[in-house]
Length: 487
Image: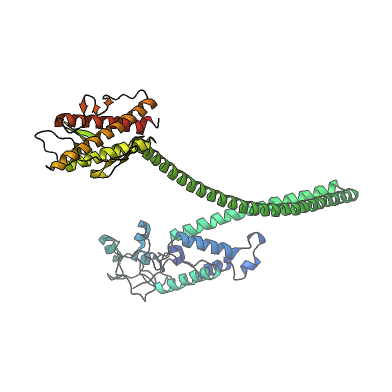
């Protein structure tokens, strides 16, 4: 089994060139002499005084462009050319540091010992390349093919050459063609940049020399001294300007500090203003709410006032109406007719409400009756005579059938006539105050309209109609007293 070198960058197997295989020992000495020694970097010219840096940069760029085969990550796929370099036989064990050479390489290595007669060499299947066709493997065993020389001396010489190259440079050898091309490209680029830098230095050096020559030729010692004096004056002027600029900067710093203090004060004043503004807004909102509440209460009060103004409490307290042929006050019927039994308790209560209404109207109009004094006492109301014997007349009736009933009905009739007299005086007062008030039924003694208010010797229908006229006259007086008198 034969072993060969691998690329120190991509770790691909290399095929030894025939020129390296047939290299003579004297050629090794020439190659070694042409290589830079270990102290060469310190003796190199100044224009290229960075060999280690150049090789380091080249190696770094070269390593960035070629993925390392020894890294922990999976290697990138090989190109078809690199895949063609891979051996097709069984891979070696981990402790093996070389790969098998192709049989074509072994055949192309000449024999360094010419005295050795040519002989055939049998190749085992383990050393033959899987990439060679079967007919090529057959050609290897032909008798006219020369036997290659032993592989070990060539490997030792090649390894020695690669060690020399690796020890004298910062690049590990050997390298494959692709890695070599990348290295040459980087070195060529660095060489071009170094040449440009060198050309710049040379041009700058020429300019400096020309400037010195012009100064030496064009200026004398006096001119030089004058120029120096001029430059000193310019320096003094510039220093003075610098001092003025520094003083101005100090003044500006003072002004800046003052402006910063003013800014802080304005910030505090602004914050105070906004606090006062917010307080004012809150107070305005509260006042607006209170104003809205007061306006709502005022509107509600106006509505209530209008409702109360339209409301007549006297009409509610003394509701005068009719129920068929009966006049009613607060739902109580006043009068009697055949066939409709009305209790005297209801009639007496109705008369009590009627006397109270007359008393209330007179009191509201501040009117005083001359001959009578009204005493409203519900179902047992009466009228007292204010002059003469000051007799009392009951304004309520009774349904008892005895002799005293006639006497009581007589007093009841006198009381109703006295009530009618008081109503006539009140009507006359209202007419005197407001002639536009019209009463449909006039009062004359015991009659109102065309009927009498007396119960004795009178028909119940006529008496009931007279009482209905009395309630109508009271309603007109009440309306005028509550509305017309106020107007």
